[in-house]
Image (cartoon, rainbow, N blue to C red; front, side):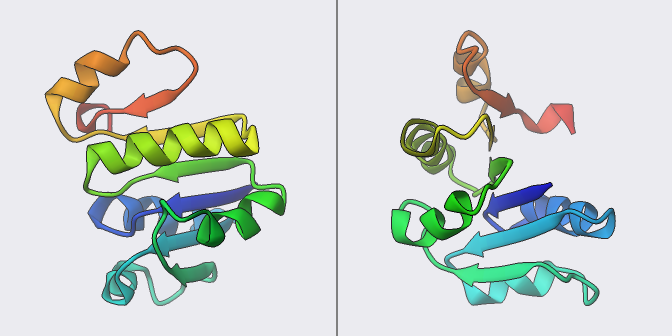
Length: 122
């Protein structure tokens, strides 16, 4: 499976490392080059420095038949915007967004077209 993860913080890097370990093709995008230090030395996926809200950084990976996108930044509003844009512009079947605040966790439960992951589920 080809996976794109936007955000290489604590949660995004763990997810990227685990998916890479089990053999998935993983592309990680983060605005900060230093964030990639969290990835394992054995990480064989691709690293892209860029902004997940800018389609020029996201488009090449999503047009190459990506199966799923994880919006895992530390900003709930950014994750929501990324998920909405990707779902609308690329018709990707699976878009998972990470929410850190209770407000968004409660608000998003009724939106069935998107998958959200509150921290308590991990």
